[in-house]
Image 1 (spheres, rainbow, N blue to C red):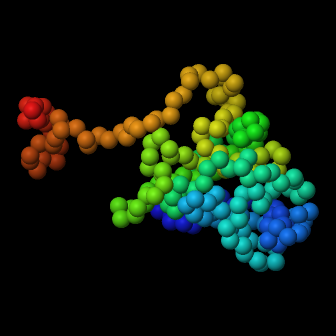
Image 2 (cartoon, helix red, strand yellow):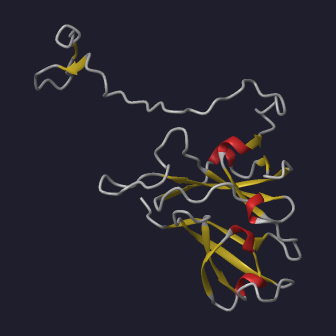
Length: 218
């Protein structure tokens, strides 16, 4: 699985000139680019790698550096991204059932924003020798990040609990939550944690499952 860097579905868009000029000038300039990768640096917003028409390659730009068309007003990154990367171990998935579906989310200013689903970033704790300093494996804290192309031309990264998907053939109750959802605070589902069950002590291919209730009844 990827560590630090990962491929993403390429995004043909524009990069704002001020991000290429250390925020000193060129705020009114936009340059075609192709975003091709993401960097997951703990305690930093997800960062993206891209190439430009002159062959230049740039590393680790935040999502507010980009827009889907020129002359788009830059949005405060705090209204685009809710959480920093949870660990250096990141996966990228474009879920087929959500591909290109309309999405909405509510930003920090409580403004409802519409857009289109692109793909999803998700984080994990790495191998058994890696120290998980974040919350990537904590049930009540872990979040994924859905990358969204906003209708206004900006891009956003939002977790499950901030977004709603519009699938015309299925989501027929938009705006009417079917239940008040509660975050999973601690449950970790594990099917090998019960002392009651064990496999039979034999080399049988179709081995039986033995009930050890009497053995562990103390």
